[in-house]
Image (cartoon, rainbow, N blue to C red; front, top):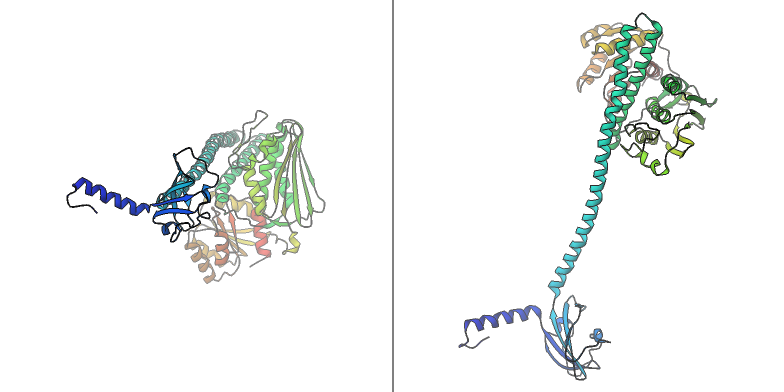
Length: 498
């Protein structure tokens, strides 16, 4: 190491120099222009040279020198070299007479760290780009939802004002049948529109969680179209628009599909067509072939720009509006497409500026007489109703008694137990919280009633319908209850008992 008389600083300097040399594994070579070894000193084996001898041909290892030029005695630092044995080396070269002087130092650790840093920088750059993209998407979604909230305030207030205003007028018009009917129709239109808005809002959350449920029943499509005519004709007439219907003569009276979802899609598409058409009219066509129902809604509006067509299927994207019409909630088309796809079909939009828009969808719709018995008429049958809400109880009473039903009404489980002894043909009950609804069904069976029990619920939760059927209920009806749906579902249940 050092002599005894050397100073502490000299000894420290020598120690660090030795330590550095051990880590860098220095190697010095001198070769002639033919790459034959003239002299060598250092860790040759560390760099994969093996034992060296004077005159040894090193051309294969020193190919990096081929074509290299240097000026005089200047030292050239070469890029880090991969020596092929897992070692990376920094090489310095200097031109000597008829040959080269080379100095190798180990940079394996530094090279490894550099590669790691480069990979990290690359990954960070990718992450940054992804974050930037996600940030832009979130900003867009936030902007669209903010616009949506503003539009929804308008969308809800307009029909609410109509419902409340005409409800107030109805009290004043009790003595004028014509005026009263006008008021009630306006209230009905506003209520139906509010229901479609609520359905769309709830369904958007359901779709985002992949929980959209389809429940086919026997559907009288012609009767559904009559409802659509009653709903939309006044609005079309107010705008001076024609509203035409064409129905395939081959369409069966009953087909097997989800009537509620079909109604929802029709309300969205026809409502949009009327909303964005200023003159001309709307034509709704239905074609039935090979148990596929194809529906076309065509309008004579100003059309949709090509750039907006795909965007209209994005949630909360209301498009550009046009015609001076305030855009809607931006959910109708998104939800309609999801519903149609769940029903086994597809929804498309075609539009030409200045000529109008065509919305077309198709869904599976087998004829009902191929899948089950016809619906049973309710006239003369006895039904027991257990419902805790007085308004719902009164509404169902009016619906069922209008269909000729002998109705027994119970307000609680004890009254229900007493009325079971009258042996009803069907029991209709409001859906209790678990496990009470299971206990209620068990209670009815123990009391001797073995007929169908239909539940009425206010929520359409994931898997609820399936659980209800598994527990022994015959069907589940979801509020709000429509007269036609109630009569049809109860008739289906009685005709096709589980």
